[in-house]
Length: 477
Ligand code: NAD
Image (cartoon, rainbow, N blue to C red):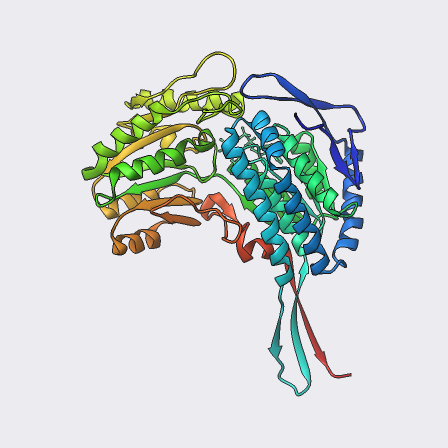
């Protein structure tokens, strides 16, 4: 049922040349799923040479032909969705229903970029001299090096692969070593759809070794990374040394502001469903709940009920509503956040502990009486713990929402159109959801401000990330 683990370099599925590698573990059972090969420096050089060759070929392939191949890849992902979703749940832990939604989104993203790649329009600027033509042509930036994390093993890699391919770039992707099977299955779909050798290459290895080598290569012209802020800053510095274009999708700490006039019960249900999706391991997860005093008790009551009622277990078992955390680091981390919050005076209204001693399970947790100084209010929690705090006024809550260096996503709930406009204007955030949490679609720009990064994926901005402008001015012969 699980994927055959391999790298894909220059049109060949391969094992690493040195035999080095690591085990991939199922977070629900701690069983080893397979052995993942690592790329040696020689393997990475091979991938770089392939990406150079692939770029020369792919940039000259018409946007129409590229689009046809990518549409076929999207269809193959759809046709194989059940199989890919099962692999995803086995290696990452999220419940199968969520994995299926993620794989369906991955197919949609691929299809959308396939279409958008045919619209990489330039423009004509009127000349100052009779007969002069001034043109702006959009060209692919060049071979891309991309690095993706373990929390969305389908959506995150396909955003980068499809964005690059749609623009006419070749790509070397290093997907997460902890969730490699899903990306391998996606690469199979592109290969079966007809993506030529060298255009798409998949490697694994020691992350810092791989990224340093690829980013330093003069062949690579664009870096795209999704992951934590510290790693993003490190890779941005490496990219800057070669003056390379970069997209950085980094962490968040999303405030959720619930005003008195919202339906506290309904909002609590929506917010709890959003909070515990993928066990809270989502960069746009709602993480800091600010509820206006009049709605606070009702909101906390319903949110806590929902948290306590969730069935936690192996994501492959029917009826499971929340799976394990993706790795042991996350369990240790969330335990640390909760212990620290308690030390700062927090009350545990639900959860607050590990479940069982096999698999990385942690109970859906609700914290009240939380001090704004506790770590969970200042560092990205990336786990199933929800701190809920009361607030009094609009200005006060905006100050508290904007006080961190994160600026990825923010949410607000209100029945007032005036408050909705005021709050979306005031929040320092790359994305704002008003009265719902659905802020990620293929056709809309996804990205942060402040330390949450720069650049976008999705929307016309997502294609733009892989293009450069060339100005051509021409006077008759
Ligand atoms: P981490 O910060 O070391 O790694 C995050 C991701 O970056 C992993 O996929 C890792 O393989 C990759 N990575 C690490 N060093 C790299 C390097 N030098 N070059 C290229 N890739 C590199 O730690 P972690 O334990 O996996 O995650 C910790 C925190 O990262 C989480 O608490 C969360 O805040 C954040 N995170 C964010 C996202 C996101 O979607 N923005 C995804 C995963 C993790």
